[in-house]
Each structure stands twice: as structure tokens, then as C-alpha cells.
Image (cartoon, rainbow, N blue to C red; front, side, top):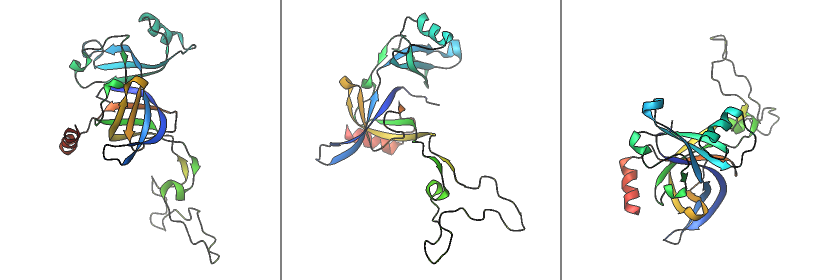
Length: 225
């Protein structure tokens, strides 16, 4: 569960930028926000501290109870609503319902966590899904990419639970920790992150301030600044 401030966004794609040393750096472009504060959860009223953020206004059809939530706070219905829990009640200070949070929340050189859903690859065999080596390709082996025998011998005469087999691959939520922010283009609501992040182009992602920053990483970030 996230315990830091963050934004909802969409993965635009990958490109490259040039650093101060002239070397090109691969980056992922994220459209981060703008997000609207739909609701505020406090420890006194709800038992925990959190921000409810809305992303992409313009939703027309939605269940009446959800529509009533937006009508109550005089906001247009949002397509995406996510809740971000905060570690301390003091982190809620400065936020109010209806406030717009932009990509300016992040700064270049900062470490963030990226949460996204990986690309779905459908039903795959063990060679692709688990990296099996497979059998010989020649000399009439007749065994190339098939799983083969999976059970033990007379003892215990069964297949152990959790045995790796072909199956559905991808399409699961993954979190990449401590991704460095290369650039922030607040006017265009864009955040450029070093390297790749989970998800296909156009998929939803969540950016949050890193929750596991080591002392060594803090020192590196301070040196860059």
C-alpha cells in the first residue's frame, strides 16, 4: 500500500534525451496528471490518511452512487479514481477537495516508484514463460519445447504443488522501485523516467515518491543536485 504522495498517469512511450555529459539516456515518457483531489480521508474520520485522486474528466455514464460522490463535491465525473494512502496526517496539509495536482509534484533527480500492469502475452509454453532450455533440435529427438514428464517416480508418485508449467503470461501488476526522474516538463504534464517501466503504451500507471530509499541512494541524489 502506497504511503507517499503520487499521481495517476499514462505511459506515452519511450525515447531518448541527452544528458549534461552529452551521452544519450533512454527514458520513458509518462503523462502524469493533472489529477483532481476528489476526496480526503483522515485518521479521525475514516481510520487512515489518504487522498482520493481523479484522472481524465469527461466520464458520462456511471453508477448513481459514484455520480453522487462527484455531485456532492461539485466536480465533473472522472474516468479514473485511485486512493493514495499517506504515512502521516501532516502530509494532508495543503490539500483540499477540488485542488489540481500536476507533474510539478516531482523534481528531476528524484527517485519514484512506478506501478503498472505488464503487457499480457496470453497462454505461453514453459520455454517462453519460465526460460526452459528445451530439448535437442536435431537427431530425431522428437522433444523440442514440450514440458515432458512432470511427476516424480514411485516416491512420492505425484506432482509437487507449485510446479512450473505453461499458462497465462503477463497482465499482472508490477512495481518498479527507485526509478530516477530524468526530466519534468510541468507545462506539458510530462515526467521522463530513466529506463523502462511496466505496461504497454497508453496503459495506466501510478507514480509515487519512493518508499524504500537507502542511505546510499539518498547520497547519490544529493550529489546530483
